[in-house]
Amino acid sequence: MEVIFLGTGTSQGVPMIACGCAVCASPDPRNHRTRTSIHVVMDGLHVQVDAAPEFRLQCLREKIEKLDLFILTHGHADHIAGMDDLRRFCDLIGGEALTVHTTEEGMGRVLAMYPYAMAERPIAKGYAAFKLVDMPPVLDLPQGTIQSTLLPHGGINTLGLVFTERSSGKKFVYYTDCKRVPREAIAFARGADAVVLDGLRPLPHPSHLSVEEAVAVAREIGAPRTLLTHLTHLSDHMALAAALPRGVEPAFDGLRLQL
Image 1 (spheres, rainbow, N blue to C red):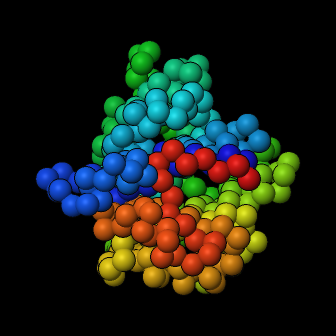
Image 2 (cartoon, one colour):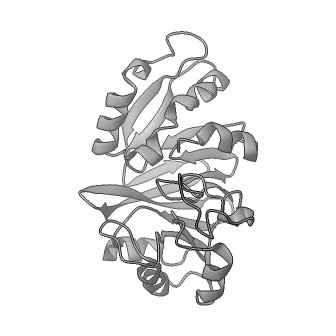
């Protein structure tokens, strides 16, 4: 299994508009964060999770040239605003609608933002078409399983995802954009080879895990490797990496995990 971190930044991105702080001005490329999303390759199946506003640029940078399945964790702008650029992948799968797995809230947001894409096929070559499907508790595929669980995020729930590759048995957990991780989600994540957690900033936040809260969740899960994502300009990559306990680290744009 390969996991590609397309983006690891907050909704404002880093550098942030009109900010000259040390992180926003940093020459360290790991402090340059586009909005959060990942691309998972599981036994040859290409799964894209969320489409940030920079999705097109992220795909070009990381040479993403195939997409079989799209999962939208929730309908907030920093996760959905790049979905129009999925149109190229509709071309690449033969002019068919791309299946989008999401929640009821996510479906409503896609319908509101992309009414022109609600069709079995694109209206013309080069256009997007989406087939909206409710994300089941377990998506059983020839390449493995994708398990979903709901995570509280302000006034909505987001999808937490657990990928298990059939050939290798490797297990990867992706829990972004959440204020807490319920007991059921902790149990699902145990035994994972790697876990990604929302770790917005050192300070508390009403709808995201803080770095301290994320570290506490990481200890409960007990994975050998935990990575923090959805980071703001309050976290310098090198300083945060030095402050975190063993086994926990900040993710960065372009990071690739081989599991």
